[in-house]
Image 1 (tube, rainbow, N blue to C red):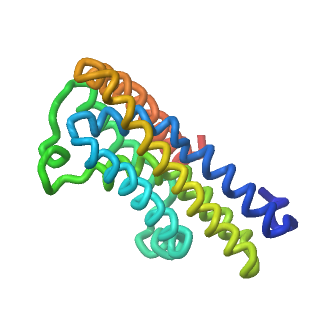
Image 2 (tube, rainbow, N blue to C red):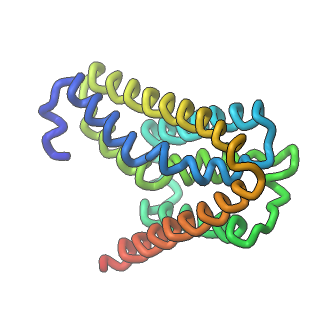
Length: 206
């Protein structure tokens, strides 16, 4: 990333867009989204898709603006943030694998668009750290605007991807949703373990 400072605003924005799109990985988040919204109405699924994208956008922008200040003030390292996100995702994955209902998710007050979809699944440590790094190289109004546009465009694609993925639920029926939940739980557990291991390695400089 050392060459980012020499890029034009357009090239800088395009590179930020591609990088964030790869890290946030909308297709990769789709199985987890479908597993969590399988029992919701079609209208609610669409609403949750855009809410998840909006929550992720809010978290990413928040850390882009105040990330360093907040982490330094709380004396929290990025590795600590990564470990916490991994533990949270591990708990969610165990619920998906065992079929245990989470009352907070199924109750009217619960909102899966906030946790775990918006964060840490979409706006996870990887996306947060990447955004903070790009902010360091966004010198001048043009590059800052290009970075903001890249962040917004990425989340528009996330919302569209999740919204259209709900069409699959009408084809796979209830048994398919259960299968999706088990597979998503297994994959989510693997991602969570990787995050926790990476956090431990970072702490101890391994």
